[in-house]
Amino acid sequence: MAHHTRISWKRKPAEKFTDLRYSRVHTWSFDGGVEIPASSSPSVVPLPYSDESAVDPEEAFTAALSSCHMLSFLAIAAKRNLIVEGYEDQAEYIMAKNADAVLVVESVILRPAVKFGGSPLPTPEQLAEMHALAHHECFLANSVKSRINIIPREPTKDPNHERISE
Image (cartoon, rainbow, N blue to C red; front, side, top):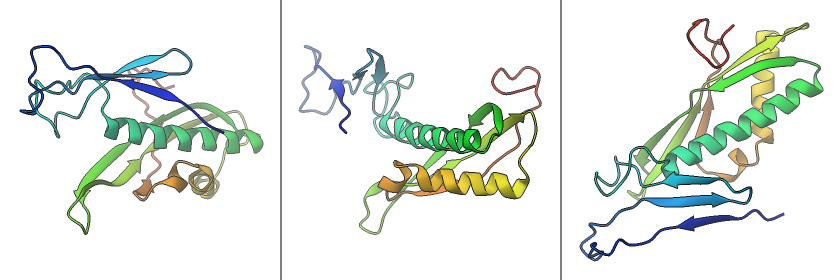
């Protein structure tokens, strides 16, 4: 099974390029027609050569791991006849130098909050087991060297929060 993306970048005529003063802004295009503005992170390449409003590769890496975990978790819940009303993750990545002094994504922290509806509701032990199984079944998590920590949290009760609040 193969999946394809297209990454496009073009030098601006006024940029010399060899002086490293060129824009890192580029576009990710996906098979469904979606295009996403991308850039290096401003923490790696300073402004104005990066764009903080664009997705950077480290954010995309973290989002992909979070999304894979969520999709695995939802499938597990559905197979167990549990109704998930909402799922939200506040994922984070941590960069550090490895033993070879190379900067890497050392770890990714997933902080999923799952809102269940109906009955039965999972026990805390069942919820932990489901997250462990989702991590095991996530093919992206199985493909990377970065440590992935899963720290479940309670869904927000904030009425102004638009995602999974009640």
